Image (cartoon, rainbow, N blue to C red; front, top):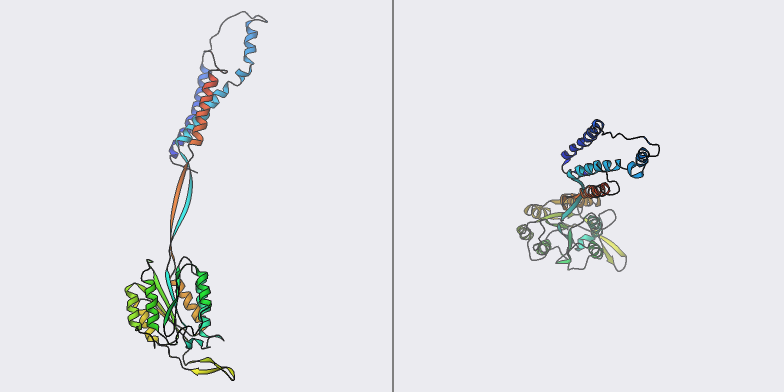
Length: 335
């Protein structure tokens, strides 16, 4: 509780001063004396009987009530208040398009016993668990690109769609330019102040009709930042294939990662390029992007004051009315 005008409390000093002043006046008052005969059962006995009545005994209560009324009125003037603080949070979400390469080379098993696509899906899924209040979509690409999930805040739907992503769903190849253009097309109408694309691939642009540089300029014109991730070890990786006679077999394939193109895309859009050569480094990359692109929270504190003066003023008025009523009826004094 706080007081709007605490200076009024200084008036409380008047109360004890009034008490002492009235006591002094009462002691100095000259009591008129009437001489009368002291009859044993006469007038004096009647006076003594009147002094012992209940009304005479409770008469000082009127004086107490007056002082209580004065104290309550002074407190009301100080305007006691109860402060109620509330926080209003406004979030400014980020629109994110995840662009995932699902070409045949993503079958390569060079990530701690798992292939690239499964590792990427697990890390992306972990990235989703750390986001909130953002709209996130998913574009997959190989020789062509496809929006698997438009921007949504329902992450459970996105996780289900990501789980079902498999290599071979699209024509083979690596159409990086087309994939970035598809993501830009999805983001360009967004009203979010922050729009980003996280593009993961393990190859070079060898399909599609749009050059990566042109797609990057297209994204930059809509203020879309692109983070590019090059995935895979240098020197090639083993890619499994199905043999009708011997079952699962492997062939050594040298997959070429065009880092220059990925760096160019990142530079044009003011993003960053990362290289992931193992599962841990890929996790660190997505964790770093998560730190870079945080949802903005704006907190506004609203303080509401509840006036408590009425809780003191109303009793004061009631006590004053009661005092006036009693002093003019059952506790009336004859001058």
